[in-house]
Image 1 (cartoon, rainbow, N blue to C red):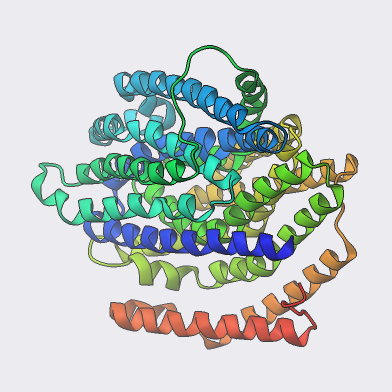
Image 2: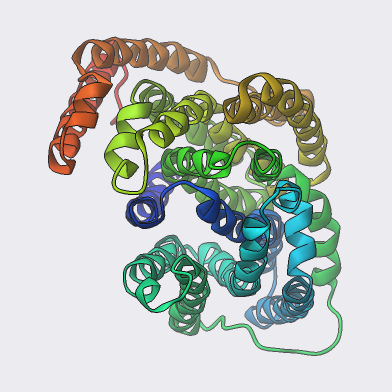
Length: 509
């Protein structure tokens, strides 16, 4: 089981790494050509709204509720019944997405007002009007990418993890090419980014169709009702909160940031993008594989393998997540400067983005833990418990946002999000322990202390070895990359050497 889990999560991590690297390249071009200002704030809001809903309806609540249903049908039903489940759920899902998209395109200004009211009450309505226009282009991406997530859930259930993990590469390529070439032909160049989002969604959906045909599971439109649809509704509605609370919290950050000084939305965005890299490579990759494996083990009533999968996922998350957390905090400004501080992206914007990256980065381990623990409940068909944890975390985030945002502006919003993730993870484990589903093993606790010590040793090395921020600012792009690359590579070496000296045998794990 461990080899299968490691192989599958390794495939997802490799494909996700490629996607996220291209995502950083995409953000480099956005920063280079458009900077961090009111115009980029407008685009990022218009992009974040469908992207947020995509994570709820697509990768979030829908996938988390759908995969256990499909896995159960795959184990206990005929292939014909599995196809009926796919057809009925796919048809209902498509109808709902069409309705939501049509309403959003018509009511775009209202939606922008709801999610970024600060734009409307600004003396200059340029940001508000531009965001409304771009939302009409970007919102259909929700329909396309949700269907992509639906297709990806089917492929993951059949152990085809590479294709769904690779698919986001196409969005990044579309946005990169649009920012470089399409922007030259538009009266408002930044509108090219909105068109890049829409084109990327089309490419992603078309890309997955051949692979669905290969496993003979291409969804087909159908009529009538099916019990699987009722089961999905029952599980999905509460899962909207339970699985995606971190995304809801990030959206709340954006809403409040819209009333702060221009650039605040962009500063949070760039720091969040760097947070997303290790979170996707570790947390989302492990969660994607864990949900499929846990759902199968639960359907097979294999309690031992079920528990081992949770423990194994947490160990991998800990070994990879804790040093990444330390790296994000200690190398925040060098990372922002190296990746984004060119041309239109000012030194001040880099400094502000680095501060929020430090705040987000400190909560990375909590974000990863939530990604791993929430699917444990969902694989058992329990959507109520993650909802309880999610609601507690979301309320905490709102309260902390108001308090910390008042005193520390956009940095306070990032701190509040990290603290709410910690609260969410703590509550999830409390319920796992209370319901006697899972307890931290002695091996896991010992691993935590060893990994913490190794990460501390790595942190001391970074503080003493890395160049001062001024050296990065004075250097050209190649020199920046070289300095940062050497620091990261040596830090990784110091970390894993420390783990080995502390007796952690990764091969035996």
